Amino acid sequence: MKRIDFSKVIGWLGFILRCPICSYKYKLQNIRVIESQEDEQSNEARILIHSDCEKCKSSVMFNIDISGPEIFSVGTITDLTGKDSAKFRKYLPITVDDLIVIHQSLKQFDGDLVKALR
Image (cartoon, rainbow, N blue to C red; front, side, top):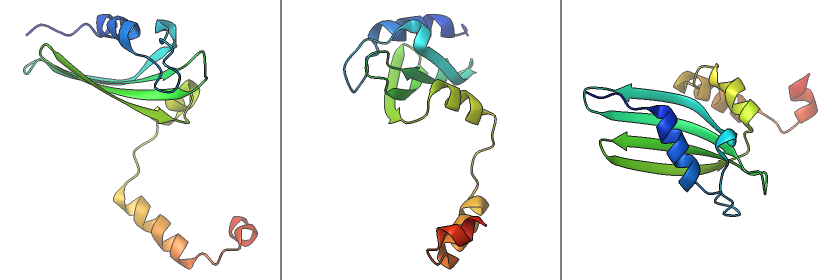
């Protein structure tokens, strides 16, 4: 199977993606690939990108799924900057056990934030 040229896909996305807040057209240099994976056998790929809008300064993460000739994109407004997304990329995902620990801590929390931070 033919490999997908991610740089061409990102270039194409730079022409069509617009900020969901102000409709400003994203500039290619503001689009960063956070994660990508490709399955050559099924000719499918997934790309997670982050972009900051030059005009309104909002940030959006786009999940792009490529399935043969079809491309699907879903954008999510985020408060993560480009630096944040690169920083958090190296961390492991939150697990179910992590959530249970947080839940148990919150159940015992008495509302005194100063005491909790000591």
